[in-house]
Image (tube, rainbow, N blue to C red; front, top):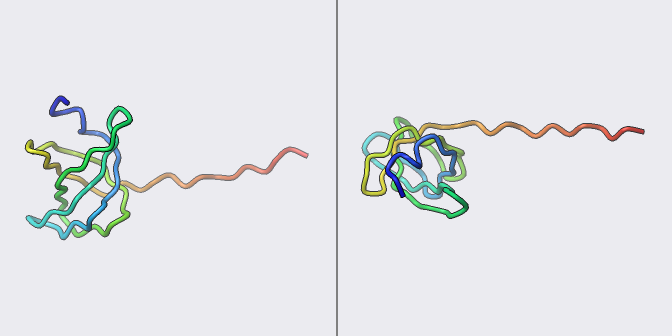
Length: 79
């Protein structure tokens, strides 16, 4: 996989990121395949947080930031 392929992808924190120089683990799906990376963020992010990959450090390490999911809106059925 090309180094920059993962940049811009949305994923999920699978093992909490402690923040700063203390990574956690993130799961990112690329072309239908789940990949796991050491994830670094400026602040702590708990498991389950959706993230955006903003930089690829190489050696399966990425920088991420929280990325809020878009809430689903339920539209009422036409009567």
